[in-house]
Image 1 (cartoon, rainbow over the protein chains, first blue to last red):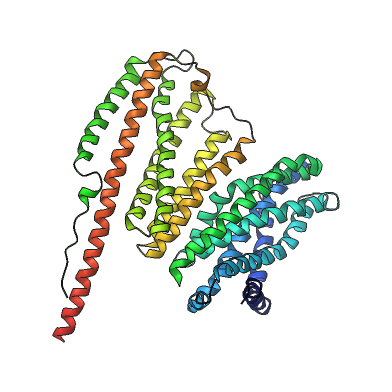
Image 2 (cartoon, rainbow over the protein chains, first blue to last red; image 1 turned 180 degrees about the vertical axis):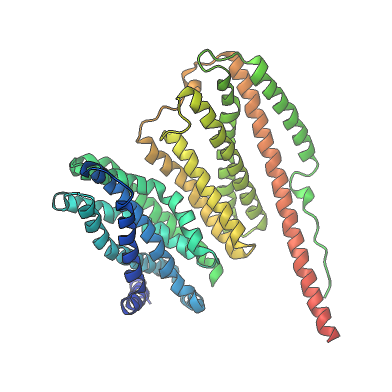
Length: 227
Length: 244
């Protein structure tokens, strides 16, 4: 089977399971809304202050939801050791990584479609004015974050304490990316426009490329022992 | 089934000369500490607190040595599958975290006097903290994952990711301008201070090497004990089978 067909088969299977069960989408979306509400109660004062907090809240929420999504999508392969069957297929590692990354991106993207408007509205950010630019930052940041999350979730999925270990490992590693995303979003929310955020955005893109390359290489290494 | 007693790995990790290395460490460190307190002059504005510099900077340098050892050995482990490489990676990470903790503890004491605050959002502080967190996470995964082949692989992946991440963290945090002292590069240091610093750097470096070799030796012995244990359990199982 070609790369594309293997990818489509695995990603299609995962998305079909999720669309029928909807367990990740429902729980993670609800969780993200709860997180945002908790932040709302953490006592930001006037509207200027809440607006300045919005980028941080947005990215912390995405980071929290991310670990839920990444952990769960790979867990399905570990149940009844489905991964062992998958790995029997020839040259499967590349398509498997791409498929898992795509599924993670699709799920996290779907949740972000709700998270971004909710954060912008509740934290007093003019969505119409900055929405497009913020969406670009969110899309770019999510790519690198999901790449790292995919390889780490795959690696940790054999361990008993994987749910706790994933955030412990993932957050420090993707901190530079999240920091650049928060900074870029801050500039956009402050109304400085895409030109001002270009420096941080190019850092985000560079990190994306590095994380993608590293994750792709290490994904194969991490799975070698599972077959 | 024959019970083979594994050869002890003591001689493979430094052997005899670990002792000599330890003696050299003790001598150099004693001299270094002596020089840091009694030979180097007191800094004009900072006073005695400046002497933390002789411990802080060498620790920071060997922290990087530890994490680099971990990443290099991790690559070697993934390529060759050698248990020894895995033991070296673990030793490197442990020592890196140890010295990184020393850096994170000594830094704030100095900062309190110099900048008037224990902690700031200064880039290098954040970099050191994040680096420490990454490798503490590495050690937690090691500890929780048990001694399976899978855990070794996962940790090798984490070790490589961790070190590859350090320059990225650096780029990200340095876009906020920092105020870390750069005494050495500006040449603003008395010759006695430079001497004391060099001896301390040598001492801490030697201490790092000694600890690394000892930790590798202990790790190899742990491996031996485990192999032995597995063989014994297998042997007992066969004996039980025969008896029943």
